[in-house]
Length: 363
Ligand SMILES: [Zn+2]
Ligand SMILES: [Zn+2]
Image (tube, rainbow, N blue to C red; front, top):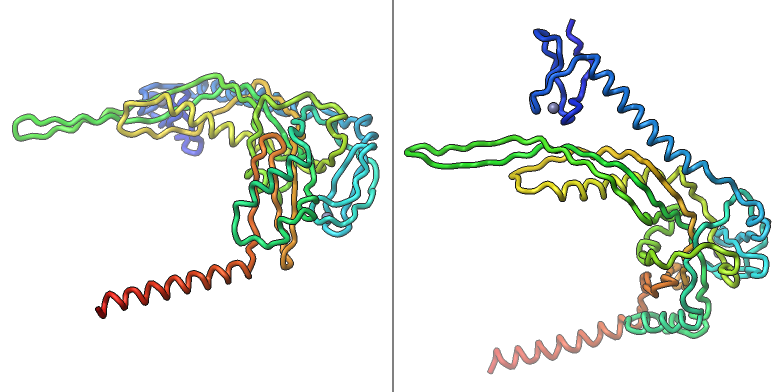
């Protein structure tokens, strides 16, 4: 009986093993190792146990928190009846206007089921400074409609905290790779090529610090990518006074939902890190690294954004400014009138050029 249905991987190099009916063992044609079925099963059991421990460490990190009732009781939530945005503010800061569409927001109740933020990045400059920075940013652009830079429009800039998950982790990463070295030489009438095959194994402990993932759904991702990063050393322990005078966007993504994305980023970084230690080969094909989580830690973090939205011809334009670094993201509306004037100027320029050419041609 040949057990063809189970494919075993070589414990040393992760290559597929072949069963040899003669010896009754599984052999690896790459690293020349041989294993009995019992040895392989024991290895597999140990491997599963390691993965279960890793999974348990990740789950423990997720479940370690319960909603904070005291924090919830100090926060009010508001709903915009026009665009549906949900925001929250502390008791002393009554929110009145939606930061997205400037409609009046309605008190929709007390916050419930949310935990208190662990960390916060405080706003580094006030509204007046944010307006100044915005004028400096937008003033360089051409073709924006005149009212876009009006004092009244820019006065609508609003400070809002966005929720993020910030992850720290300690992992053991291991990776195997196949590599070749090629040597060619000539002797007499012959050219020789020698290809050597290598099996490479790399393993190491990696500490990840401050992996930042938005804790809100897709709609704002492009904007958030546009203003990141925040410097790591700007993180502070959260306390209520930081919220005073600002509104916050309500978190709608839990840790469980971003765990896979965070894991993918750690895997990608581990691949780069481990691959960078392999050099001097003609070809290298690395496998996906195996990551075992030892410690994982999540910080629910609020980060500051100055937000400005502008409606022009039925479209809403959003501008966001990193409330710590001042970096701005946004697309500009284009004024049809200003474009038309430029078009006319280009037309005149082309006319003169054509006239000059004629002059030269027919001289
Ligand atoms: Zn092997
Ligand atoms: Zn709204």
